[in-house]
Amino acid sequence: MIIRSAELETICGPTSALPVHDLPEFAFVGRSNVGKSSLINALMQRKSLARTSSQPGKTRTINFYNINHEFYYTDLPGYGFAKVSDKEKAAWGRMIERYLRDSAQLKTLFILADIRHEPTGNDRAMLETARGFGLEVAIIATKADKIKKSQIQKQIKVIRTGLKLGSETPVLPFSALDFSGREAIWEYIESRLRTPVSQEIAHGTGTTDTL
Ligand SMILES: Nc1nc2c(ncn2[C@@H]2O[C@H](COP(=O)(O)OP(=O)(O)OP(=O)(O)O)[C@@H](O)[C@H]2O)c(=O)[nH]1
Ligand SMILES: [Mg+2]
Image 1 (cartoon, rainbow, N blue to C red):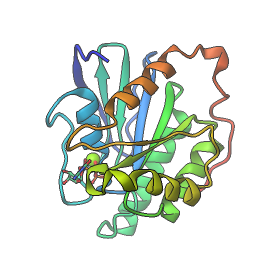
Image 2 (cartoon, helix red, strand yellow):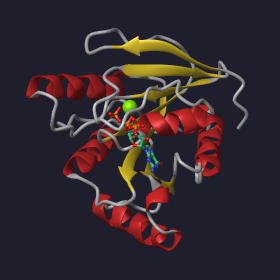
Image 3 (cartoon, rainbow, N blue to C red):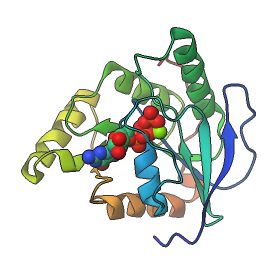
């Protein structure tokens, strides 16, 4: 993929209206600190356009990055961050859910899971919510540099089993340190961009689960 331009175009808080446009969106969710913003930087070929931090809870808004004036990456706050108050957690949960439900342009939801760990209850709830909304889902197993190459397939299996994934849902390993796996994610995005609207599954008809 050739990145000709990447701009942070819109920032949405809990009560902001979602942007209205007609470009496809690719969103990234997952627990706090899993590496969403780092992955988005890697996919934009920008060092720090999306703000990252070793402290969980860095991204607190929904940030829309316009790529090549062709599509958007959507960076979302993380879930499962213990240090955030229950009130704020609930507000973030509602904000994420509202976006997943209302964005007519969302092509694929990438759910990120740390390659070293079993998926959490929150990850399973997110998957259920996404499916309930009829979204196309792909999983990205992050921080692949933290385990031996020989362990990668085994850990992917742990994620597949933990999320009860069928063969239709890919699990793509990725490292923001050495960018391994980036090409496969770009290819996946490109293939989704080529999918005609008529082959899309209906979006927005499902029921809501709490995160
Ligand atoms: N070793 C390694 N560290 C990573 C990788 N991806 C992210 N990190 C580190 O993990 C920490 C969190 O990364 P972020 O990209 O800010 O995570 P996030 O999911 O956006 O976090 P929130 O915005 O807080 O929800 C940072 O210290 C990153 O440098 C990776 O692939 N490998
Ligand atoms: Mg972030």
